[in-house]
Length: 204
Image (tube, rainbow, N blue to C red; front, side, top):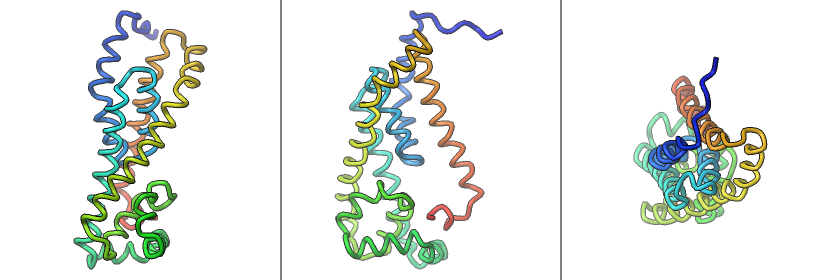
């Protein structure tokens, strides 16, 4: 038989763990997976399970850090086999075309363009865009992205929790935690699958 659900007086422990570990998980999720992790953080921020500021900062840091690393890889290893093969992919060619036409706009928006989440910063790295310019615009773009994704989760939070309360009652916070854990599990599975893929296939 399944054990009983935690009593209401045990909920503060759950909230404490989410508040402590949640931002780190969102940082990792935003770096690897992206939108779903940031949106999940927004939902939990709306329900006071995590600090809105901590969720927002973690999402910004995660996406800005990984994209700067990809930019540096593209810049430092532009003549490597990895970048040479990646440059033959359709997503990479599309990214370079957009960078040449709209350099600033592309850096601010590539996180929202399907297929360019990973290819975008690598492609920027092989262009003449400087480190300082990319670093500044990368942070601005990360702020925009986090505002949209975390904000969307924050907005849909009440509707989601109303649905959960109607089906799970007092266990709704546990359901929120379970959904968040599912997002993180999905991220880990994605990364494990990525180990079996060739580098250039990740840039499709």
